[in-house]
Amino acid sequence: MTTPHQGRFFDNIRMTKSCFCALVDALTSRGLLPHGHTSRVSSIKEVALFMQTVGMHKRQRDNMERFQHSLEMINRRFHRVLSALCAMTPELITRPNFTETHTRIANNPDFNKGSADARVLDHAVSHDPTFPFPPIGKYYLVDAGFTNYQCFLAPYHETRYHLLEWRGQGRRYGTPQDMFDHAHSRLQNVIERCFDLLKKRFSILQWGMPSYLLNHQVDIVIACCILHNFIRKFSNDDLIFNEPDEDTPADKETFYHRVHPTTYELESQHILRDSIAMQMWASNHPN
Image (cartoon, rainbow, N blue to C red):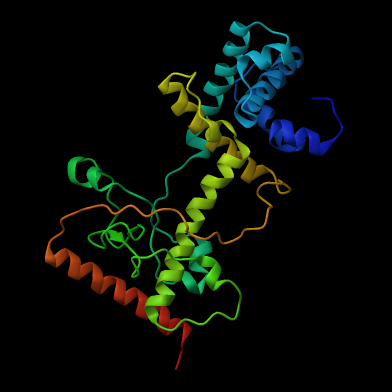
């Protein structure tokens, strides 16, 4: 913790020193971790231990040697920080209200009249009466493996779509459908990049956590998302967030999900998709 080397600190703690100090202050000032001079030193160690575990995927037995504590003490401190971070959920993880379009989409002509984004399972739609359908006029963005119906908006082409083919300012769309599919793919890429950033920062999300109880695994994922949002909010010079934002090719396998929409549902959603595509085309090809 006392090393002056910023790069080494970031590699071990997965955030800058200033952001780490802000995190400790946030947890102690809210009474989620012990405060006071002596207690603060202990809290710093506890947060560092937690970050080593989720960021470097250190085993608790490795932390025993590094922090010179018993396994029972290491586990207790880890779970204390885990609980403290999860207590910040209402502050750092908020559901969108769907009343406004995100500025990144609203200000980008490629996303004009675009959709909300999510990936859903058809089984949940058919069997879960509490499934969170979006409000009227909002849609879940789904890939080509899903049927374009109801509130799920799929691309036109039922083939893999490579964003790299469309990189650069000189790209030209041959049809409104091409323009729609490119915007659709870029929206999907935003979601995938978020997961990539989480896994890049928190190795525990890549390699799994079978030694933890299921409810603790859920809390660890939530805590990583809270840390992700905290770093995004309080660190302007984060090395991971500042990496080039590249369009990645959609080269993963597509799984086709069977649903049985009515003819009316299919036709209605096809008309909606055509309308969005034509509006995008018109906004980029003024007379």
